[in-house]
Image 1 (tube, helix red, strand yellow):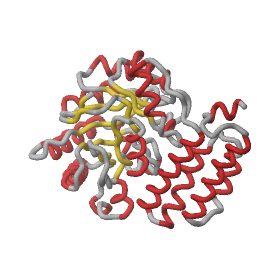
Image 2: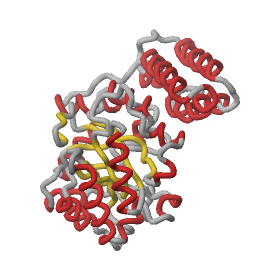
Image 3: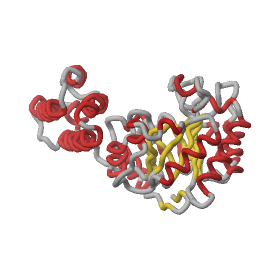
Image 4: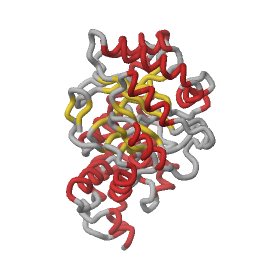
Length: 342
C-alpha cells in the first residue's frame, strides 16, 4: 500500500509503544517483515526537544524509510512547531497521538483526552497539516481511539474532521480511552469509520496472530493492521502475518536457535543505542518478553533483574538458550512449540 509518496512493503505495521518502539526495536521489526513503523510518542513542548529522552525517541539514523515521528500534545501552535522541527531533523511522516490512555498524558488534555474536544481536535489537525505540508510536503497521519468511553464513541466524527483537514491515513484502536487495555477490542466502529471516509484506515487492537489479522481486515474492510503488544518479545510476528495475508499459508515458527540469535542481535543494537547503564536497565523488559512461556523463563526473568552489566546479561541469555536445548534433549533446529510439546 501507499502512504503519500511512499510505497510501503506491506500493510502490517508496528504500533508506537512508549518505552518499546525505539530505533533498535523498529529496525528489527522492519527486518522481520513489518511494512511500516512509527516512533514512540515525542513531546511537543519545545523545552524538551533537545532532551536526551526526546532525542532518542526521534532518532531514525540508518532506519528503513519512511521515518515517522509521533507527536503528543494539546496545543495547536506548539504541535505545529514540533512538526516543523522534526521534519527539519529528518522526519518524513508526522503522526499525531490521540489514542494514548495513560493518565500522565490525559491529565494534560493530550492523547485520547483530546477526543472530548472536537473543536480543539480540528484546530490541531489543521495547524499540523499546514506546518507539515506548506513548503515541506510531509504527510500527517492520526492514531486515535473510538471515543472517550463506551457511551461517547465519536470516532466517525473525528475521522471526518481528519479527512477534511488533510490527514492522509488513520489508525483506529478498537477501544475507548476509558477501556485502557482491558476487555476485548471491538471492530464495529472501525468498520463504520471505513465506510465514512476515503483515506486509508489501519485497524489496531488485539491483533495477535495471522488468522486474527486476516479476520480483522475482512470484518472491518480496513486497509491494514497495526500490531503492538503481541510483538513484544515476538518481533517475527510481522513476517508471519505478512506471509499469511499474501499466501494464505503459515510460516513455520522460529526455532529456539533463531530466537536466541534474534535476541542477541537485538541486545547488541540496544546496548549500542542506549549505552551501558541505560541499555542494561531497559533491556530487561525485552529479555523478559522473549523468554515468556519458555521452560524456566519466569525464573530467568527474575534472575535477569539482578544482573548489573550488559556483558552479564548477554552471557546469561546465551547460557539460557543453550540450556533449553540441553534440557529438551532435541535437535537445536526444533521450534519452541515442538520443544514445549516434547
